[in-house]
Image 1 (tube, rainbow, N blue to C red):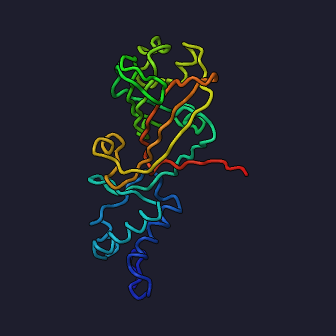
Image 2 (spheres, rainbow, N blue to C red; image 1 turned 120 degrees about the horizontal axis):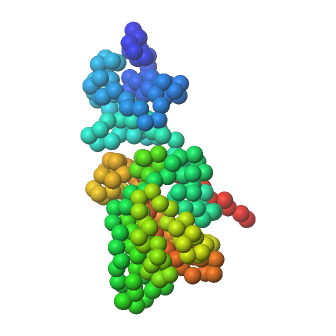
Image 3 (cartoon, rainbow, N blue to C red; image 1 turned 180 degrees about the horizontal axis):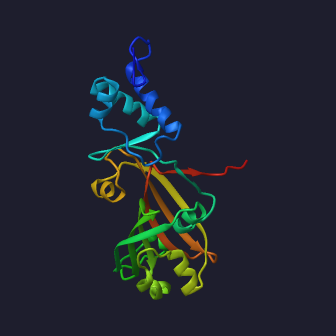
Amino acid sequence: MHIAGVDRESSIPLYVQVAEYWRAKIAQNHLKPGDQLPTEAEMADFHRVSKITVRQAVHLLVNEGLVVTRQGKGTFVRAAKHQWDLSKLYSFSEDMEMRGFTPGARVLKKEIVKGPVEQLGLDGSNALIIKVERLRLADKEPMAIELLRMPYEPFADIYDDIVDNVSVYKLIEDKTGIEPGYGTQFIEAALPDRREQRLLQIGAQEAVLRLERVSFSKEGVPIEHTISIYRGDQYRFRVTLER
């Protein structure tokens, strides 16, 4: 007997059949990225199966990367991941604009602090640092949390201009004439803490990517040290390898 995509006489497990029903809906674009799937109870009623069966089906779709479950919110069709070419030194804003998205930034905290920053070549305890924490957005959707540090000199003049929805790289070039030339970057996977979950609107078990970057001017002088926490469900990184 067939009920809403489920054949109870088939040798295929029910949860696999339920998963296939929703997999087809996504493939046929009946469900688009960001759309919410029915609740567990609604799916169980629709397919006339148990909630345990539905839970297994959703888990299968999550493992396949088709949907993402957000605690307290529901299950959503996963958007295609943004691909970032790590062989180029792009700012977040430049990368988003190249992909046709509207980049954004919300300043969470901005201050001038004292202390050494090894990555910037500042080893004195009285060295002045511009420290900015921002939430990075693409089409108003949170993508990353960014903690940026720059030497106060020669960037004192851009401090007041670091506000919401402004590209710091563009400020640096336009107001100081210093052009970022190259950088080094490290990437590692992690699980988000509670604050990161809240800001990025993700669950406790959704992996994030932690990027640490030091950018240098064309003359080889370090100009910024940035630690960014990216949503793992939204990004994948590409590197060109040569031999």
